[in-house]
Length: 464
Image (cartoon, rainbow, N blue to C red; front, side, top):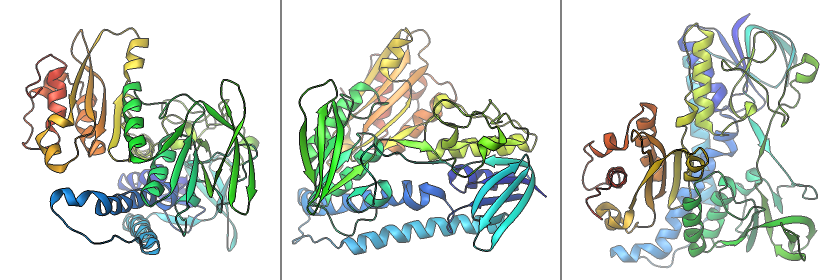
């Protein structure tokens, strides 16, 4: 009998397991994969960032280093070595989680899990079936890729994100269906390495959840980098041939059909909760209309002793959101007071420049009828950015007119994913733009752009 059995060893599950063990609970964690870390560490966040970084270096060596007085000969691509780097990064991370499980005496179980009754889980593995009992069972099974009708993913010519991370050669042309985070990141990787990339999006804009001004700037920059966009367009058919795939496209608002051919197609239209084989229907677990596990504020399902966290419960499908939920739930199960502030969860797009956000967009602030101020500062006016030749983008801070409280922050620019952390912390502690503006920032540093944007929210920037 365990105190906690967790199904899923992704960021939500493994972090929940470690925190529960730290709090003195006995823990078992079950996963279908032989390696821990879930989608994020194995075929998601970590390998994609390894390829994004490697392809960024390749692009810099090919086109950008001359501006710094660095002369290089003809730059060559060894894709096998790049993929090996990615695989090593993945292996090091997953082994790190295994080490932490061993350190905290967490029992690791490999196999498919089915919840057969409250507090009872059957695992089907290589050695047959094994049953586990626990006072608490946690569903942390994450999410899976969504396909489109008529586009059967074969990971050869029609790819999910998993297949797009493992290509053995650079396709001459790549069609990306979906202009969200995954589509833009992986489209960027293969564009840098030489593919002609066309991004097809049903909506009339890229990055639908992002601030509209940020999305427009991001599209301009990505277009300048070589990505082509077909917005307001739906894919209505696909035909495989020897030369790749021919897609049939139609305007989302209606109109004449057209076709586009590509060596490979990446389907990046979203993700769905992964509940396959868990036995939730038989158990009577309540799901939402979209198939997510329904939970209350304490991550409890309608079944006593059964909880759920992460992508499988919906909300922002982000590894760090799942991690925070895992910590909060572990603390609740140990009798403490776990909590997640969903208003201060950052999101990052790891293109270059990076795109990062926290809190409300300007559109959302307007929709809520909140009187607000906007503070913006461009990286063209930041000394550190100039020294790096990385002057694209800006920092944008939205603050309430009534009390100057920060409502949201949005960054397009170098290291935006790191810079946003300061503003996440500010929002977590209910800070005002004035608080950020009066905080001393090192010079010269990219973070000064954050300070200047906060100053601009009160109409007193120094360097513009």
